[in-house]
Figure 1 (cartoon, one colour):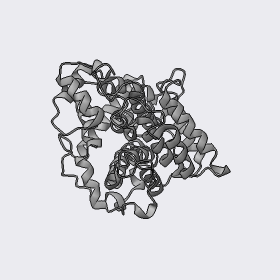
Figure 2 (figure 1 turned 90 degrees about the horizontal axis):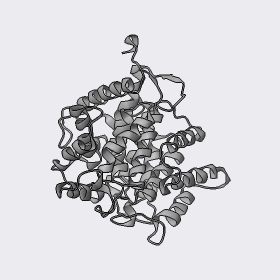
Figure 3 (figure 1 turned 90 degrees about the vertical axis):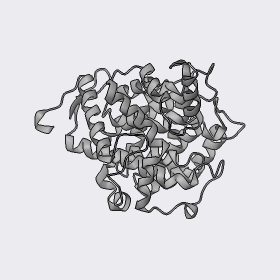
Length: 364
């Protein structure tokens, strides 16, 4: 794919289709592996670290559980809305599709859907006047799709947040998902290696996509600063402690949430700690993000999804995907695995062209 970045004045960037497909599938794989790895630990430790010895042992048969996980089935509702109604699907139509869903939901998703069903149309459905927990983690955990289908186009990922994230999240709750989407979008053009500066650079690029004055952006800047202190003794354990003290304790800064341990800022910090201290290694990234606790299936899903986009599907291998059931449908979805990959590419091609890019015939 040959495309123009969405920021004004940016140079044209080229991504070969084979590389896009590898990275795009790697992003979905990373998300699925991360959420399934951390699943047994979810909310079992709050303001307390897991030791690596306590963490689950990965078995590739667990991968298929992701096909029934809310981290996936909610965002596939959004993917389906885009496929059926087009890239410019209105937030009202997206809200109708979400309101008509029948799968179980929690936290901001649950409250947002209830608002819709009670006649409060989006974007009002996420406004604090009507919504009791708009700073919950929800759009952060289901925004992966927005960057996966927007290769090199963080502004489009942000726009998709306006179309879908505002259904259930507001303020920092929305910015969190827009930031994650921008991370994925930029990850297509930011290869990962063992130099920590590459991952820092990616986070810095994505940070430009959300309001600098937001509390979520402040959290991201804090974690980046703690990461820069690594070589003066700032281990991820110390970063975790600082994050808890500033964003994660009941007495610290939290938003309007169901409970403090589901606030986007503290869980967003844990995503970044896993990603930045994981040194570009799949196992280390998901272990650190999981060991931080709180929503410890969603956080490694985001961290490993972004890394998977950088590394590509080939980096995972049979150890992680050897038992993938390609004939099984994602819950509440018309998509099997290969269908998801195909619709992701279809939407990405449409977005590239819509954003002023082009797809060369010799690379299609």
